[in-house]
Length: 144
Image (cartoon, rainbow, N blue to C red; front, side, top):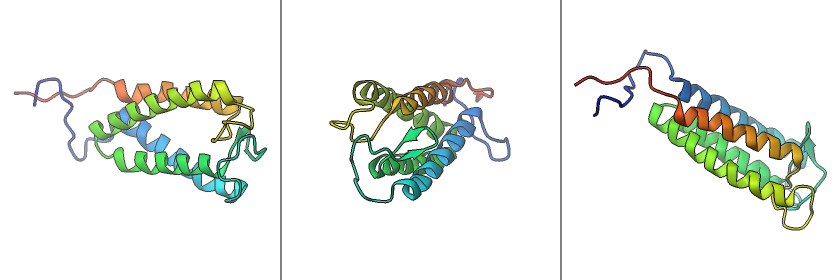
């Protein structure tokens, strides 16, 4: 272990990266479950379904993605390293989905996640928050 690697010690509380991963994981898991109450299971990958949770358009495939990402966050927040990897994965993944959403939002063809402008803003916000989790500096370092 080098002098700049974070130390995970039980009882020290959660590192901000872990808190971010936990909160994002819980939020996305909850949205995934609640999303199915809105969309049901029909039109699995239909674009521009009109089904919305608040301002955000959904379809069952979108719900599955939220559920998988939420479960991953809940599994990976337990260590600083896992939380940081989760942050990187979300940041890269949602940056790609943001660009994809710019191209297909509001369209029926090619919009397999049924994205709209509100989704794009949320995804961009997720990129920023995830990067914060991935890049948050360690407050404790190991000593030799």
